Image 1 (tube, rainbow, N blue to C red):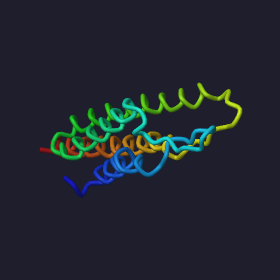
Image 2 (cartoon, helix red, strand yellow):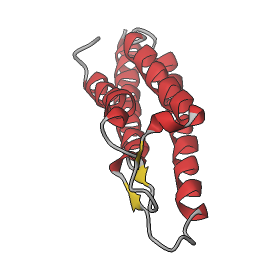
Image 3 (tube, rainbow, N blue to C red):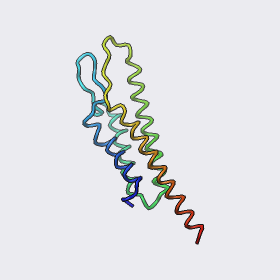
Image 4 (cartoon, rainbow, N blue to C red):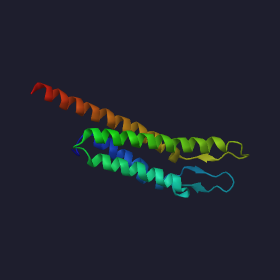
Length: 137
């Protein structure tokens, strides 16, 4: 159902991975002060797109709670991979003379992970409620 709390969490998570990366830069290069967005790398675009697609599919598979739970877990794993790429990128270029500015785009996968975990918790609560009602029949 669309009116459940996990749907709200999933919609905000889609906004974090599909809409906001267009507006918030990942970082700014120190030498030429150019903002780097996620479209500068194909791997970032693929990861952001696949996370958004999995979360969107998860929203519309509300009748299959186990499938929704698994899709959210897969989306969390992809967010961790994306976050790992960002951490590697920020740590590998730390020896520059001028410090590059980190953008809010690096934090978006972490916020998305928190929202997906909250959605999974709500899905688990719904599943437990359905099992308890089935037990009473």
